[in-house]
Image (cartoon, rainbow, N blue to C red; front, side):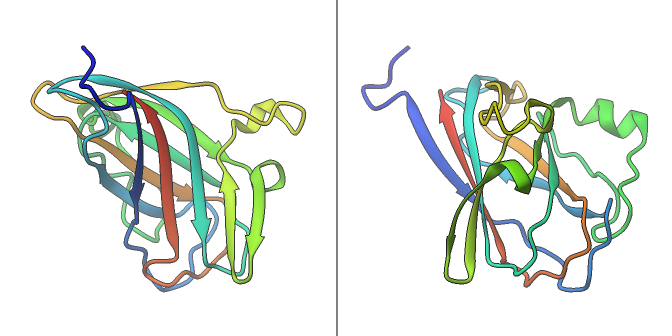
Length: 167
C-alpha cells in the first residue's frame, strides 16, 4: 500500500566504534538498529544501495550482516565468534561486502565515500544485487553488524552508513 510519500527512503546510521586498534577479522559493531527500515510491523524492504562515509585514513574492507533481531557477532574489537544458536536467533537475512578496491567513489579532503559492492562481482560489475530486508513480526527495524578485514584505528564516530531502501 502506498503511503502518499515516496516509496524510497535514505537512512543514515552511525555505529559507535572502539577507539583502540582493530585487527583483521574483528567485530566493528553489532546490533546497530536501522529504524523504520520497513513500512509496517514485520514488513519487508529492498536494499538497493549502501554507502560508507569514512573519516579514517586507512581504506578497510568490511563485511556487513543484516538480521531481523539483534545479533551479537562477538565482542567488539575482538575476533568475530558467533555461535550457531545466536546466529539463528538473530534471524540473519544477508551479508554484503565492502571491497575498497572496487567501491571507492570519492575522496573529500579527509573523508572517503565507498559504495558497498558484492566482492565476487569484481570491478566490471560495480553494483551489488538488491537484498531484501525483513523486520521481525513486531518491529519496523532491521539490525546490522560489521566485521573489518584490515588493521585500522577509528574514532568513535568515524563511520557513517547510508542505506538506500525501496519500501
